[in-house]
Length: 281
Image (tube, rainbow, N blue to C red; front, side, top):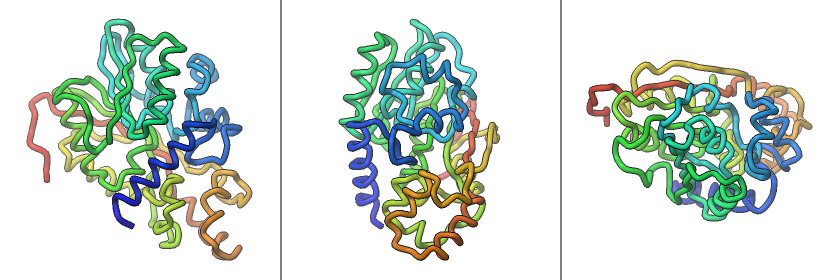
């Protein structure tokens, strides 16, 4: 699949989601609260943001892992309807700022409306791609991202851009989907699977190596858990949606399900050196 095809598929998918309650990894918004709970959000988190900002899109809770301080500038890659941005905004306070970047105009419009409804004066949403961030060099203290980098066909470029945007000594906290073992080609080559979070995932060691090549140091695993939580259930909404359009037999589906125990939700912490070094290209 060509990069422009993948990018268009992801953008179109999120444009549709912006118009309704739903997420990339489940068929309807009915599951958003449960998915958020699985990802590590509390009931206080989900109830303390504008209605419609939590679409159940995450596979972790980077805000909880980030130890955000008052006055910090935070950048959210793939901010969606603004859920993580609004949680971070409460932590940075009036002297801080949160910038959300998303490539989908429809999602951006929804996020801005949510900010208006919630009166978040310290949150700004910008249109842009995470491979080409619309932010200045060395301008933010923290970069967060939640189940978005796996959707990019240019993951190394994403981390290079995050590195560029961070101040020296700044940090990045990313929640994402990684593989412990390669999935069958029928899943990896499926466009539907790609936009539903699995086809774009790469091996964990490759993911960590890309971050290191971009210049990050002190890379560590902050959290990890099986994903999805019950991979043996063919009727699980997460799995059913991924397998629906693959046109495979039940036997093939069961084989894939066994392999999905090697899919992991992971939280990663990393830092930009205080004294900048040239990233590996």
